[in-house]
Length: 142
Image 1 (cartoon, rainbow, N blue to C red):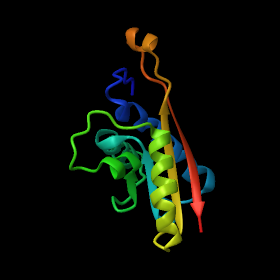
Image 2 (cartoon, rainbow, N blue to C red; image 1 turned 180 degrees about the horizontal axis):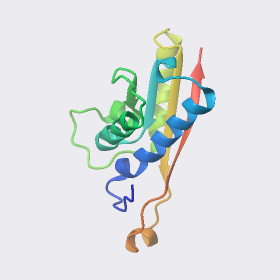
Image 3 (cartoon, one colour; image 1 turned 30 degrees about the horizontal axis):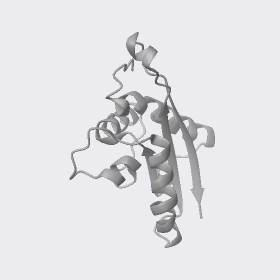
Image 4 (cartoon, rainbow, N blue to C red; image 1 turned 135 degrees about the horizontal axis):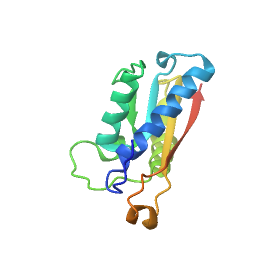
């Protein structure tokens, strides 16, 4: 998307998350309803909205009850947050602390977690280059 603003990391990373989600479903020949929960991290409010819109544009409709973001689960809507957390840290914290406990209780049988990251440097920012981003997916099944 050509995002070069380091204060808008959710928007920068959303396309990488969407690309990974699409590739996962295509490679395994499954649909989004295969999973009980699909969580990115950390796209935040703006990035999560962008990811939802991009998925819809690409024909992947995921219900809001199934599609969430680990940063949103940590920070919620009530707090004014000017910077989120690391995508990998948010994903790991929420997944291994909260979501796997919910899975143990039987609330979920299958989860897809997509940790996002960016290769941001002061030099690329100063040169107004877009921020290269990456996303890795891990599937949990019980």
